[in-house]
Amino acid sequence: MIFLYLFITFFEIGLFGFGGGYGMLSLIQNETVEHWGWLNAAEFTDIVAISQMTPGPIGINSATYCGYTAIKNAGYSVPIAVLGSFTATLALVLPSLILMILISKMFMKYMNSHPVQSVFKGLRPAVVGLLAAATLLLCTRDNFSTPSENPWQFYISCALFAATAFGTGVLKINPIHMICYSALAGLLLFY
Amino acid sequence: MIPLIEEEVVNHHKWVSKEEMLDLIAIAQSCPGVFAINISIFIGYKLRKTQGAIATALGTALPSFLIILAIAIFFHQFEDNKVIAAMFKGIRPAVVALIAVPTFNLARRAQLNWFTIWIPIVSALAIWLLGVSPIWIIILAGIGGYVYGKLKVER
Image 1 (cartoon, rainbow over the protein chains, first blue to last red):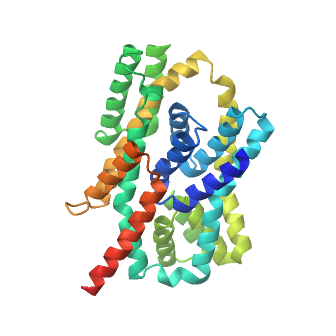
Image 2 (cartoon, rainbow over the protein chains, first blue to last red):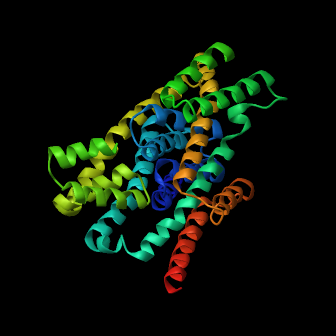
């Protein structure tokens, strides 16, 4: 049954995932973390981190990783989990395949028409909201700890958050470098 | 990603012209799904119809799939390793910041004004506090855009 749910979920993500990799992120998170509980917030964050460090598209990466982890966490063996990651990735790509072929076949000339462009225009501000929601939903105990549970980890986490936001947003430091610095900080301060 | 695709498809293999490529990129970006997959399906379909589309989609997805699969298998064996755990404790808050920053960049590119700024705010709060599915937000925003575009033409 979990395979069917994985397929339907990632098919939906592929069908409604507007706004590029980041726009898709909130959909993936909402479905896999909030709705199905296949991953916790920390595991989801790990996937995003791994996706940042590897070259592939974030959508494919999350589908592959999530398919594997969801099946593995449900208690199945590695080969079954590989099948899970295949299912999720295929389900994510399928809507694209159907839609792009349909567009190529008959709708190419309508893509620049006024009604279609109006729909795309309406989506743009909403995608900003989606990404903001993804950020807010990731500010959890799993990722930051809490002042009462582990004040040391909490304040360091906040500092690392601020440093990375400032580093990549203002100083334009390469995000991958910032991830490496944070890993080093984690190793020195949390080990 | 785009320069890499253009180099191969337009300059090297000459499968599509530069102008057509620009059109395809614009459409692939506005459509749902993974951009690299979308554009590769367009090119594949143009060259060899449905079979070509399946071939290019597979070709684009496969390297990421294999890399991430290897990482997933590897990572699950080292999850409980204390060194890895400490490193990821440092990485996680940084990654949240890496999602927060593009939110602002995206907001700037969406050219929000006083008339549209409420849309991302209400959407974010609905998802965050009320647990509304982002899918509903996307459907509503699409309908909203369509209706607004129609009213604007009629006026």
